[in-house]
Image (cartoon, rainbow, N blue to C red; front, side):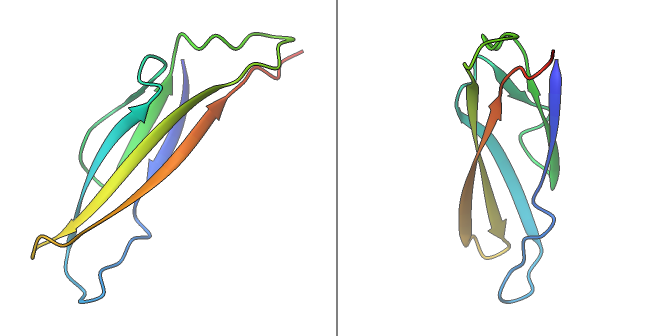
Length: 88
């Protein structure tokens, strides 16, 4: 499997409150899984992606991370990770 490190460590709260994070795969869950659903850092693992050598096909996995402070205020961001075979 191919892996990718994801981090929310750069997130800040306007009031300086401590943040808690929740992660989820919102699209492409058949090809990408996360090492955890909470925490500042997670690892995305690709497996079973249909991309193959010599093919222009790519597989996208959409990940959502939500930051929540102690008052319950939240902010959500989304990232798309793409996997495609570039080997020779």
